[in-house]
Image (cartoon, rainbow, N blue to C red; front, side, top):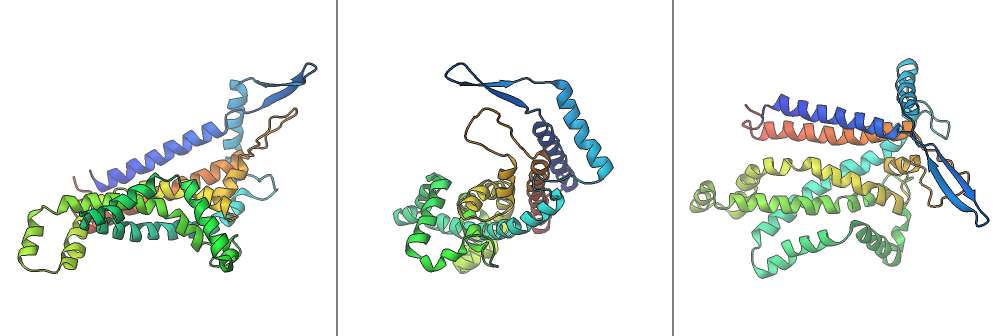
Length: 310
């Protein structure tokens, strides 16, 4: 597929998802919670109205067009300033986690592909499979418990105030994307092992590390880069859990606050959902995925000029 066409498809898909996000978030959510009877049974009543839905959508775009901004948050701060503040914290985690995932994921995949024996299966693909089968939330809790109990000197890494506060969250967030990429890398390497150029390289007496990193890895870059978008989705999906557990006030944590989640249904309930914050922060997260996909396509074209051709 042509490179420009492929990038165009990504952009159109991004615009479609953003449009769907706006339409879903602006869906009317006004509910009436009352209590009836001597037992004070809570009654949850919701009436959908197309006119209210149309008013929400019209009001949002009208305000955006005339005021040239997304309004204020429930804390009376401009949404743009809030997004800049919280994303400046989370972007450090996201970028660091992406590079950690690429580096350790590729190395782990090379190790898995190069160790087909029983011992290699235990510490290679077997270990990868076991770690991936553990729920991410449980794995993060275990890591936090070990840190608090056995490494109390590092307990000050919680929060976001210090310059190094993003390092531990980035390490946790990168675990599952690295495991995912290691499986992709191992499969790509095994596919290259029986190729003719590998046999020629062995017959010339080239060292194994030269064959691995100069020949096999170079020819495996394209299938690896095809999954960078999925890696970024892994990173973003784990970001909220890590930020919440480590009290790191980042963009995912702020987005969760915007939903105004309440665990109790009570009389007079009023949800203060911040639609403008959800739209802006959700769009920024999807924009990160789009940028990674475009960069992946450009790198593939640079590594292998045949990629992106007609």
